[in-house]
Length: 305
Image (cartoon, rainbow, N blue to C red):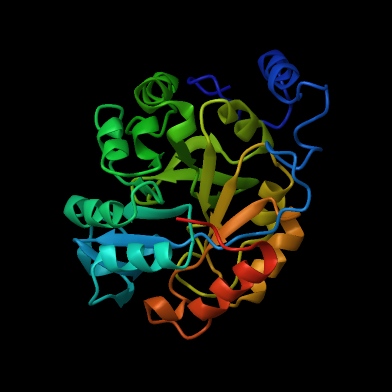
């Protein structure tokens, strides 16, 4: 067990079994996992969730594993000459709700606020979120706040009380838990501090079960393949896609629109996905933004602003 009370191993203990008995059943006794998710929809399809990644106040696409304290190691795929609000307005026009604004380090608050103001309630925000400022970002127009690093101490130990404080601040319905991760022997470890510090938390069904009651969604970035445009982490997608109790968005490695179809097939449509460096909107030449918008409208109809 973690010191924060969350399991490392796959073998369920008494606490986990009690949790499953309480939360893995719907009112009629049907497993929410079997029902296809919290809404019980089995005909759901993988949707495109857009992103606005901010670094030094500008919209950028960065190779995930290169984002360290050493500026010389940073590998940047794209720097936009447009502001964050321009992208937010575009996503609003095209009905692409549920996207996220991620602040990668300091100096991004103003740009993030401009994006949220351009589409109040249409975007989530993450980066530097703590219990003390979470409500401030909801008031600024974010539909949800996204958190990772504040849930751990400097050594990567999970802090259960911090999660409780966040739920008290904004409510679980406004909270997205970012379990972005890196490969380790035997699976994946949640990574914090711009994906540079591995925590004790492992990405498993047990971990997802234990955290589900405290959030509305999960965001999971496969940091090892992020920005490389070499394809998705299929093993991770398959693992995550088999767990369907909360909405979940995958990021990392998407290099073709067919990757969305593969994620849809591997997850039974339960998992959404975002794409960055491969997208023509961010200077990439592998995925056309217009094709994703058209696919979404064809598959499930546009969302309304």
